[in-house]
Structures are given as structure tokens and as C-alpha cells.
Picture 1 (cartoon, rainbow, N blue to C red):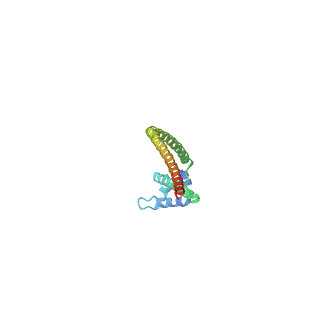
Picture 2: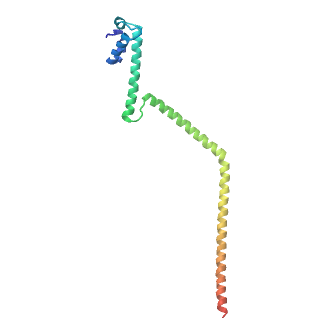
Picture 3: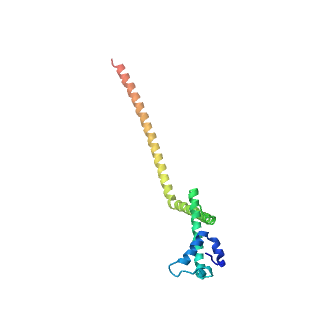
Length: 163
């Protein structure tokens, strides 16, 4: 197993086991297997296959690194670039949310302001009417007590006057 030195950059990316598997796969495949001399020389088919394997290996490494972080810390960690984009997006969302909140408050104030004022005035009038009713009831109770006291006095006076 000996790939051409022109592919040394691609081969440096791959571990020995994948280099061996690539060699075996190229030389023993079912359709159009490459001879050892073809696989050892400069061949566009070998180059494209090694590029494909290197990309696949890098993608697999990246995936495993992400999964390892998740398993180790039991939280999702992301790249710094993704975090920066996320922070920018979060800032934009926060700005839009604040603007939407201001607009909503202004809309509610304009739309329901007069209604709330009318309801408040009506409520205050009802409270005042209830207060006046309670005062009038208390006054009537006082008059009833005074009348009861007078009647009790008269009843005791009459019973004392009639032997």
C-alpha cells in the first residue's frame, strides 16, 4: 500500500486505518478495480476518492466532537461563531421586542384609555354611592336605637306610674 506523494496533504488528514481501507477499497472493488500501479500513481479517480474520504472523516470528527461535548457537560455547546451570530440575533430580537412592547402599550393606551377612564369614574361613583348608603343606614340605625331607648323609658315610666 503506497499512495503517490502528490496526495500527502490528503493522506495527512486521514488516520492509518482509513488509508488502509481506502487502498483496499480502490484495489479490490467489484467494478473497475484499480491495479496497484494505477492506485500508486497520480490518478484523478484516486484523488477524488481521497478528497471524499477526507471530507467525510472531517465531518465525522466534527460530529463526534459536538456529541462528546454534549455528553460530557450534558449541555449543548456551540461554536464561537454560532454564539456570536446568536448574540447578534438575540440583540436584534430584544430590540424588536422592546419596540413591539412600546407600540402595544401605546395602542392599548389610545384604544382603551377612554374606556378605562369611564370605567374608573363609574366605579368611583358606585363606591361613593355605597359609602353614602352605609352612612344613611348607620344614621337610621342610630335613630332606631334612640327610638327604642325612648320607648323603653316611656314603658318603664308608664309601668311605674300605673299601680
